[in-house]
Amino acid sequence: MLFDKFTNGAVTFANHIVMAPMTRCRADHADAIPNAMIVEYYRQRAAAGMILSEGVPVSDRARGYLGTAALWTEEQAAGWKKVTDAVHAAGGQIFAQLWHCGRIAHSALHADSSPPAGASNKAAANSQTFVILDGQPAMVDCEAPAALSTAEVKDVVQQFAHSAWLAQKAGFDGVEIHGANGYLMDQFRCPVLNDRKDQYGGTLENRYRLLLEIVDVVAELFEPRRIAVRQSPYGNFNDMLPDPDPLVTYPYLAAELDRREIGFLHVYDQSASWIHDAAHPLMAALRAAYRGAIIACGGFDRARAEAILARGHADLVAIGKPFISNPDLVARLQQGKQLTPFDQATFYAGGAKGYIDYPAAD
Image (spheres, rainbow, N blue to C red):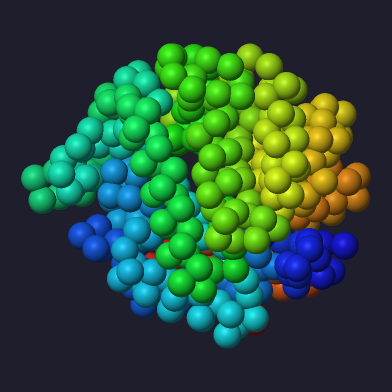
């Protein structure tokens, strides 16, 4: 099943393997345009049934890390068009992951030195980002955010709409809205962080309002089956706090996405634990609420991938770090070949080393 074709509406993938979105910080921060190295990186990995791009900031203030290729200008879209052309020429498909980092940021990353944007003004403890300080790359603590006004929240919705429009121009096969890992959409979802008194705070419906408004405007551009939404239940990355009622929260969103006929719900288990437990109730609850394709992510190898597909808790399996050091990961899994270990020291920034110099298997 893992290596069979997969069809979801008008979308057909060569297999059930997704290359998970991974920040690699290889663009020039000044213009955030994908360069030739980034084109080659994605081309090498086009055998994945579906590539989810690295998180793509939708505006300057959406940026949270140095060197992330973005998608709010025509020039950036032209750079991404080279990426999508290369992936398509190699037989693959690629979705753009649209991203707003929210409070996981620093004013040094923003052209106007604006503070990070947040659902509230609560800072992320024990969370760092990657910036240029005094002319040198440096890891620094995230700054305290400024809570977005209601009007500014509406602006964020339009920033995602504009970025989705550029993604169409750039030739992406679809888009994923990043709602996970403690970034802006996740900050709005969290009842502890989100203490707003307007229509974007308080009830579960209000806390998901921003994400669903973005889904709705993006669906005016992309056919709904070509839209994905990512969530990270139980995740604590970027100082996130456990949801008080995940078996209500996430099925609620799943049902709202189902009602809109959104194509993909991407579920990331940061701990790589509960998602592999057949008895854990969340995946079954999501399946009951949502008829689209579920992407499962978090610590998958071939055996675990085949198991979750067989029990019907997911339709596709996203794999991250092994794709970094194994551009031919699909073939290696299918043929049972040994995987090349990755070098974590080269994950972020730098040049070709650890990025496009991993060889395919003989």
